[in-house]
Length: 151
Image (cartoon, rainbow, N blue to C red; front, top):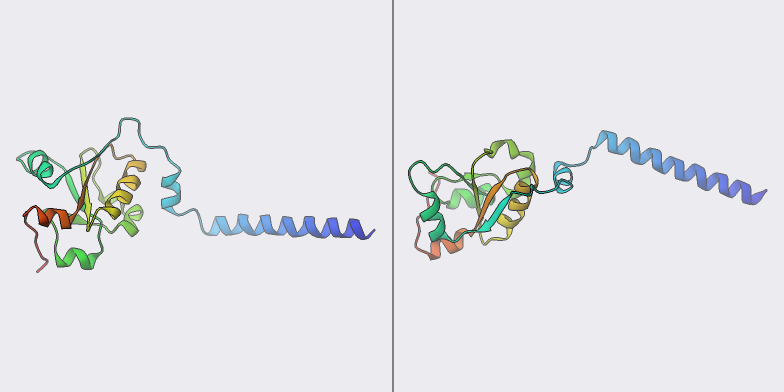
């Protein structure tokens, strides 16, 4: 009799746990980053590293449409940024994917290159087909290229 009571108690506890998980998931759906991470990257996606000089020769020319995406914090962006860049911090990129135009190359940079790699993965999994990792603004400045400061 005692064994049956224990089995019933454990089964009820397990059922309560499953019910709790289901209710919690309905009220707090999977974060966008988790949803994106579960999507496959398009087979035709272009993802490559790009040196500052390569950016200048490939993208800084009349009629060449692209998005230059700075994934640093707003404070870092305000201090200095590459001319023409838009700022969406990598921490919130998955929530602002609609701000990154599709159908054109996206060139991504951060301070040193770590956050730009993460952003590239997020954008690739969201379906962006042509992505370039410019690395960091540190390398950009070391190459003697211009930066701007917010007024």
